[in-house]
Length: 324
Image 1 (tube, rainbow, N blue to C red):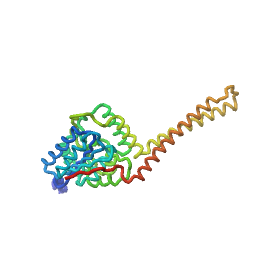
Image 2: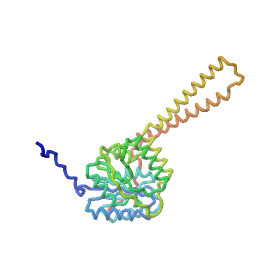
Image 3: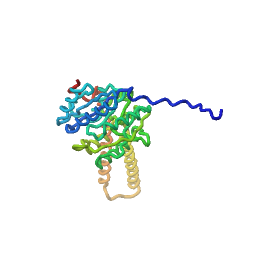
Image 4: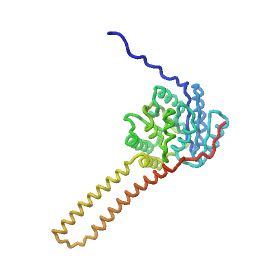
């Protein structure tokens, strides 16, 4: 009947206080700022009246970071500190923290206050809409030019390798629902990449605009070498693109060499040559051997990474654990 409204009522969004939250913070050489980061996280979640757990993972720091976070863990029932045997990398530290986490949702953030803890409440509000993963979209990233350039390169890789949806922004500041966390923790890979795995193991990812603050002290530990290493790890661990690219180049060179060889064969049959041709042979052999070595190197890289993935029970080791 005209005028009747038969639309189903919209169910109310879940109450954020009904869930518990684990905040995982990888720690590396940040003794001057990590204490303030932890204090700020505690302040935000206490003020919001939310059930929370803070998991601090010391990733082989060479300064006094472990002493700072261990002291916080001894004096608070909400804080757990893990000390990894050596520096394994940020993503390994995140996996260690996720396996220790007990919350219905896990939030990952950096140890340097560039991800303001109060912005985590925005991630939570967005997750309450039903999304299983929510990334922080930075309004203006406070980072050096090479870091922004590296982020763009990684974003391009994410879109190609992990089918990152158009318009979705990803970052290390994110919230993941328990089922996504369990899939990541259960994944047998020697080279974890949390952002890509979150995209792989989620069905309804989203992002929300958050603030990104300048680092109050010190400089970032994520330099060009680490960014390049991450890009290579993603490509070789989660994609066959480098292998296919190398194979394509190899086939192209082989085809060109075949045509060049056919040309010299025809020329030798119909035209007398006064040049012995040893230079051409040497050049062709060097070129072909070079590409064969390149292809073998690519295959070797995949073989090594596959061997690591199937033989490694764990990709990190916890030396100490402190809790109150």
